[in-house]
Image 1: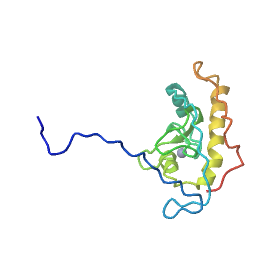
Image 2 (image 1 turned 60 degrees about the vertical axis):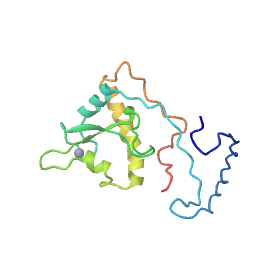
Image 3 (image 1 turned 180 degrees about the vertical axis):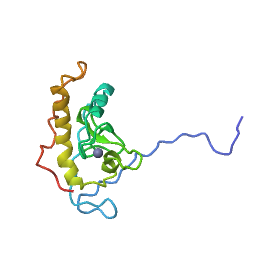
Image 4 (image 1 turned 45 degrees about the vertical axis):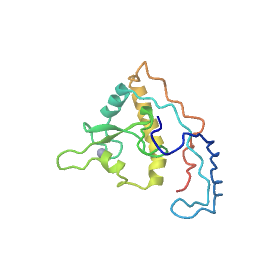
Length: 160
Ligand SMILES: [Zn+2]
């Protein structure tokens, strides 16, 4: 039984044509950029709650206060909304009555410039790993940190 006035005839869908990408430097608007940004290679991100707890036992890297530390992840060189490897964490203190903690301030970029953070985060992470190893507390089931091959060497920072 015919239900509609439309014929049931099938036809070939035309091939989709995508516009050619606009060469760098010719783009207009919000995303215009004269430089091609290299994608950040995806790393195997290791999560280890035991290690984060060890990090939180150390005094705050920024103000040195003891007993209020949280494991802070570096915020540079990662995608929005993603966390970096737990072995890159360093201790920063949390908010407490009457005191604004270093961790929230650091995460909100209130304490230092982006360039300064980029420079100090790897050093803090390395120092934290060294401290935990030196105390003989490195978790047996956690592989030691090896810098990825595409990592930016400390001191050779890209400008932003
Ligand atoms: Zn602090």
